[in-house]
Amino acid sequence: MSDMNLTLKVWRQKNNQSKGSLETYKILASEHMSFLEMLDVLNEQLIQEKKEPLAFEHDCREWICGACSMVINGQPHGPQRGTTTCQLHMRQFKDGDTIVVEPFRAKAFPVIKDLVVDRSAFDRIIQSGGFISVNTGQAVDGNSIPIDKDTASAAFDAATCIGCGACVAACPNASAMLFTSAKVSHLNQLPQGKLEAKQRVLNMVSQMDEEGFGLCSNVTACEAECPKEISVENIARMNREYIGASLTSDKFV
Image (cartoon, rainbow, N blue to C red):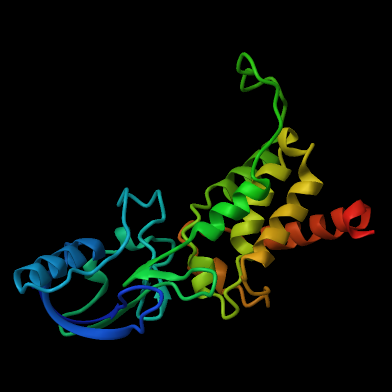
């Protein structure tokens, strides 16, 4: 049977100043739908009933942008490992299931409406140190700076972070250490990023703390729920770099 009757308990909240609650809906969905397509069907149903449609984020729907951030039955992006919500399909559920859908919960991710949260704190962390200094002019040949394969692979793995915020939603302390360490590791391991490496890690960690994210307690739920499976080894690397930079920085003398 390809069709399934589902009960949805979805978080509805008008804005950050309003008190939200879970509302219950009955819906008929196909097992071949993606989770977002199922929510599209719910919105069509709500519009036909002259009710306010559900607000949720999406963009590429191709596991690239990370915009489709929501907690499904207590798990960021749902039960399928290494997958964003848009690539989660309804065949992961069964006929008669009750599915609870909530926004990412963190002080630094205030609710805008329903399942939409403000993740601009991540943008500010990147802006605080996510850059490299290069000479302007003609583009440098891609192979002009030799980089060993292990370093390039580690930097590339860190760069796959899409900034969705699942690590924050999964962490009991709402820590952004996995996200921040991925951005630090991406640039600090490459020769082009070495010039600002010490100041970058100091600035980005400082901005992370300023945004109100919690401390890492090594639960490693962040790695388990990350759709790109970013390793917590990046956190250890960032901690080492942060301590080294702190000891040699005038800012901390």
